[in-house]
Amino acid sequence: MSEYDVTVIIAEELAAGNLQRVFAALDPGRRPRVEFIVCSSSPVAALPGVPELDNVWVLQAAGNARIPVLWRDGIKAASAAYVALTTAHCVPAVDWLDRLLSYDLASELVAVGGAIENRQGDCAHGRAIHMLRYVRYPKARPATLTSDLAADNAIYRKAAIMAYPELLELGFWEPSFHERFIAGGLVMRYDPELVVIHHNQYGVRQFMAQRYEHGIEFGAARAEAMSTARRCLMLCLSPLIPFVFGRKILTQAHSYGLRIGSATEAGWLVVFLLAWSVGETLGYLRPKNQKRH
Image 1 (spheres, helix red, strand yellow):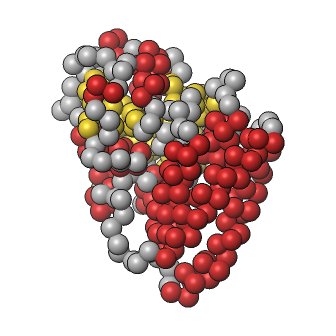
Image 2: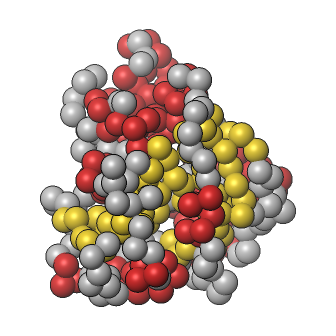
């Protein structure tokens, strides 16, 4: 039996500058029964703010690993039966750990995810990044059972993830796991009181590269289950991807009373959507069964 009640896995990708804020909120010195793993491709010396405590350690990833791969490595290494995932771009609320520890993830409840709010006074591209990635996860969204959570603020039963080793080997791409959980009769819950605050650290080019690469993985994952004819159809329709995604984002934002604050923010949103769309289109072209990164 593990000495830890939960393992918190913090994926650090180009956000080392936030680690001091993250650990100030988590206060691991007061949480001896919580394990904290920082997963990063950066050397330990480049990760200021990680406290030197017995329950805190850094797991080095190879190369320039993206967040799903960092999560994968952390999940595999976690000592506890429950894993709470986030990134160094998100600063937890002061009651975050208390809420995590209050959930009963026994029986059919396999995961609980929460809200991702944006920090006050963010720049235009930071606000665009938040709207693109997290518009579906505001505090205004009611608590309910759901098939849609952001792993950037969620806790899972580790055994349920480890039940799909072939999927995990590709990285923890949460939509794929959520589909398996729901198909297997498990349920997930959205709790708007479980809150982290998004403190973006990506530069524009860095985030464009991330969206492009994630788009490739998304397109390739969808294409695995498609016939050749279906792939050809999706390629023909691919110029519509930014319009479809953009409309969906704006509709979701409107439903929660959110809106784009400036023309500059709207411009960055379009740029990031285009980066994703190019990646998704290339993903449809990738040969089936080619190893994902």
